[in-house]
Length: 624
Image (cartoon, rainbow, N blue to C red):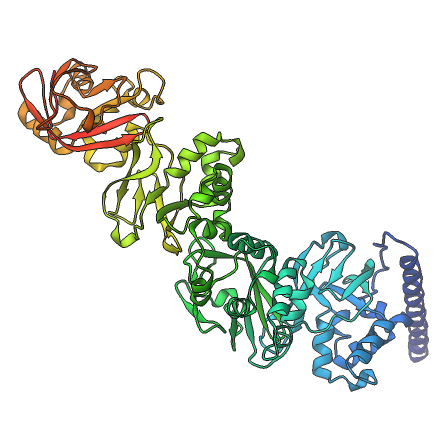
């Protein structure tokens, strides 16, 4: 009795299984019909229908189903996990087989077929609304690396993959992910494939074609395996535009073919698939050109070419079958090209993306012509874009009055060539001027730890050579200095600053930062050194500045400032001069100052010119 019941149950279960399978197939067929008539896509699939089920139940995907079976991937796409599949139909497979010389699907080597199919699969569920123009990673792998291949998604008009396959029906939802129907098989990409696919590399592609000759066809080379794998640093269109502008050229056609070959060779490393994680700070790599590139990984990944100007790596690890591509924002120049091109300081600014605001400022002020002069020599401390953005505080460079902007830019330039090795802790003069005079503003250089300018700006990339000088990249804009700027920047005046900023003192800092042309500016300041203050403490028999009472300290400090006058050393004359605290006597011949107590101070440094006055260092504190 029990055996008969067991047989009845088995028959019932078998019947139910068959009914369920039939029902699932009918539902899938209905789903496909619904999706085909629904432009919006996104129609849900009944539970239990996987990617493999969907493909197997639709005649238009019989080639894909057969390929999945042959490659052993049917179970993968029917199992655990979530996937996004770009699914080619039968017509796409037929075209693929014909284009690659295969008579039938069975002629495709199984290992190759497996990677091709995996190149259509992305981990996770990516609906069409999730896809944006850029790179994603497929499950396929190429010959040059164990890393997964990259897919370039272009959503400018619909969804296009690697420039060869378009989504014709999106967002077919299944139980373990989503399917996007595509009109072409997405072959295993090589470097040329990815260059052609991304419109940001269109000028690079043009350059590869223009540089090709009977000896080297760059497009074919980067499509193949000879000398592969390759690591390619690919300049974007903007990079080439900047280079052409810097060279004063209108198009690639104006660049001699041999020069273009030299430049392109400098962007390729042969025999190595160097991914971002393989780069070493300070490391080098030899290019096709035979010259080395240097990598700087501090504050982001950068490449230093023969100019010394950094190029930022803005997209990394675009993995292909025969190598890897990294997008960069500057065309790299080897020494061989520099010897031919020989860019000026203006040219370097124009071709260096991180100096684009400086390049714009040069054009606004007309200083681009000055720094493009090959018959002159300059040293320029060049602020980065980040430095300018911080200085502008959200405003545009165009919002700064041209006269003011001109002086700020000139405050970053010196006459002559000053390499970092020749810089020392001292004052020099920039091309900026005080008021409407010919008196150039001073710049305080401190080399105690690197190179710091006026206490506010550090050199971060020194000694970038140009045809007419040298550029040192700095991390902050060097604003026009006040007398307070120099007092704070120069450690020789630390006691003076401490006295001026003591809480019981008047707001000397605010007064002494008054802009030129506004009373009581300009100022002439006789600034006692730290040694002078130390001598004063001994003279007064006190242990420190804190032992000098507030009113006395105020009176002392006022004795060192002349208001409403910018008296330079050459303007000094013998006689009495009135300061904010009383009269002093000047001996111009011997460069001394006598205070009301008959004490004599020597003027030991002259003409530290600020935008609102001038400083002369003295070796004895003046007393009222």
